[in-house]
Image 1 (tube, rainbow, N blue to C red):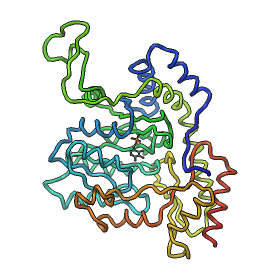
Image 2: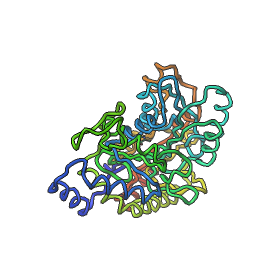
Image 3: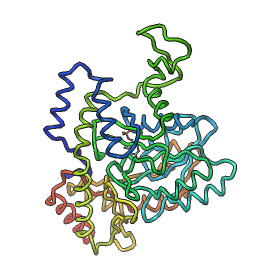
Image 4: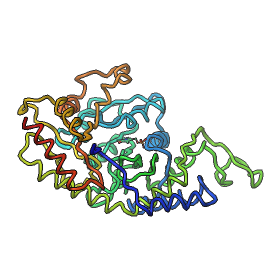
Length: 384
Ligand SMILES: *Cc1c(COP(=O)(O)O)cnc(C)c1O
């Protein structure tokens, strides 16, 4: 089986992890600081807070934005459930903004129209998701958010190493915070892991507190005087969302290859574009102001021109050993969200997308030969 995604682990990565295992700190040690600095620097952000998943990162980013019961959070229906669930963790209502049918990202025009209809009850937090690694139209989204006083958290789980208007994703030029995921299918991995980037000192301080039980050991942050060297205070209700040094060492080592990872992914994407030209499908559309990190290569079948159904093509590819996938099932159609009142038809572009999208294998270590196999099988199945 040629998988749809796969990690790349080098000998240096392994040595970096082994070095931590031989050191004094398995967690709360120096590797975390190194990893945070490496990512912050690569992305041009002032602060970075590493945690044990992007889901945890989204949760504390929402809390740091002040999201609470009675507030609402809007995101895209075409995302992993975590981009919406983080709002529910805070007791907030969740709603969605339909996608642009060309980029499959949150459509600024839909956002503008929905904001106009929601006068008086605009969301506190907006989470645009950079699907497949291509940045949303952040300038337009940020302008709308600013007009309505909405905090913006970029879910850049797919987009580390990508750029928008010449700035790395994560630089925070158009948002308050940016979240990355380091799950093994993503561009950079720590096994499990995530990170929040921000340029704001106040948000950074909140995120650090929330990551570790709401506890501080900094006498300057305490209420009243410190009792001594052992003393800590819990200032609010936080969590144990810490990443280990074992994971952070792997991440810091991986990040040194970020440019290589993203360059190869772009090269493979352009190769797919060429090899798939002329088939009854749509290849990924690029907006001129972004460079995608190409976490995913998503095609859409032109179902009207095919004798086979979307599900049949998908199944035939799996049977041919091509590990295709579908990113994503529109979140509002999940049973959990239906019970909150959403229904089929609420976000038509997202539902249309779901009926013909397929993610083809794409990862740093994918060989030209294996990519040719994917294309050959796809041609055979679409032709037959
Ligand atoms: C993977 C992913 C997440 C969750 O990441 P974890 O690190 O697995 O918690 C959130 N949002 C998107 C868009 C993702 O792809």
